[in-house]
Image (cartoon, rainbow, N blue to C red; front, top):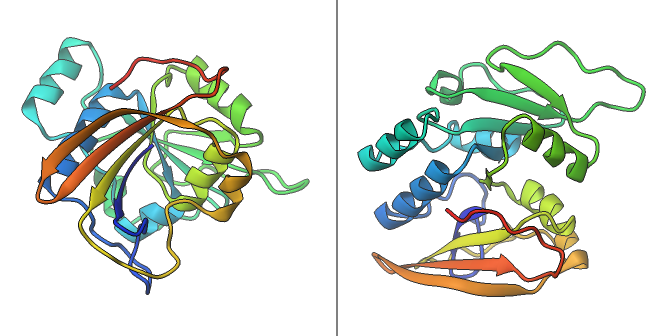
Length: 219
């Protein structure tokens, strides 16, 4: 999971909306994570607020992915209950592939695949869903938020690493990056790296230390 947070652990201002956290250093480490990934998970609410997702722009990272025979950008997997996303969002004009991960309602079939998405997978049970994504070639995933999606995966003990950029701001309010629902399955975390990103920002990388946690390649 890759997030930029304020000193008081907030994702957004007290009144809501996009916080625009993170400077050039945070952008660089985010692109490093995306270059490592096969795909990224994005909550629909986060996408509606920001309008688009981050793209890899650094020439060296793009060249590395090309040399590996990979697409320039990791595939974007949007997690949404409704599947309702405005077709005018800049996200749908970005040069990447888009899949939709959607939960069906009780005894209710999924509606037609919304325009702009190449594929839809049904979200029932997170471990099974991640196994299906892995079988389809998305083995290395970066979780970009938001809080509800992050909380669900953390509560299910399915997040292997936390990459948090601590930004020199105090935002206040209730918009924490970790909802209370995730605390019921709290894990222990091992510090892997702390890096000064400049501009007062600090990268903190932690790995979950649960004995049965899978060990995958690191970005």
